[in-house]
Image (cartoon, rainbow, N blue to C red; front, side, top):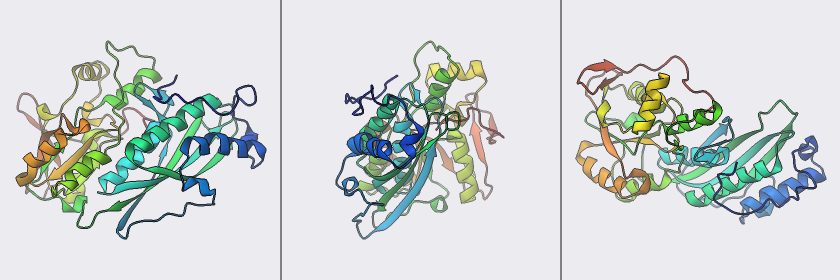
Length: 350
């Protein structure tokens, strides 16, 4: 299954080594061939071509944001993307949530013996396409091979570096009473896209993952001098878990209006049938932004000009009560406290 928009063909001839062998991680000729013909070919850029033990980077003299993440999603391919898209988007988004402009990524691959080399090529070219889309370069990496049955096909670890512009300070500690909470689009699609493949479910309409890089959307806010207090991408645990975490971090009560939270009708229908709460299903291209109410309309205007923010809207507010809970008002006007679930509704979604 190939969800990669690029049309390159795998540079390693199929008749030689169509699947990963333990020897591909042994430090010899096969490992050298894999790195040179597959990874270096896909990720080619001046920093990577130095072939050093690490990347030597020129960074602006600003504050630096640094993050790391690991990706163990099952299955590797799903409607709307694959593990390669997630590995880049997830790390880029973590940097963006700090207010940083992402610049460089590392990529560590743990390959299971028997993995198809064509599958690996699809993943790394998806990563390169996502990196180009995000304006970052993959500049260093690592490869390990584990025995068959020990690695679930492929795991990826990434780390990212970005620069934070002068005067930008984005943190849960900056959340203030009166802040409005803006969500950039509909929720819960990524988790259901994974579920549809994992459990071989046929929905009435195809539900695609929302995986996407949010750095451009964040940059639009910062470039227009909107005083963003806090940002958070709603991945594992969904929007609900993010809001609960931020209420606890800030110490203030958050009030949310459920009818203001966009959920596609097909997504809502699947959630009702399966007993899921869309508020706690993972996303990979959604964020909440906390901005002063005086700048709410300006923030919405800028977000709606961006493709990833065209459906942005205000979903809640921060109250002045020093009681760190999240309350949600439903469609009939009744209110309840939003409580974090004790476990994951859908494990292994990133």
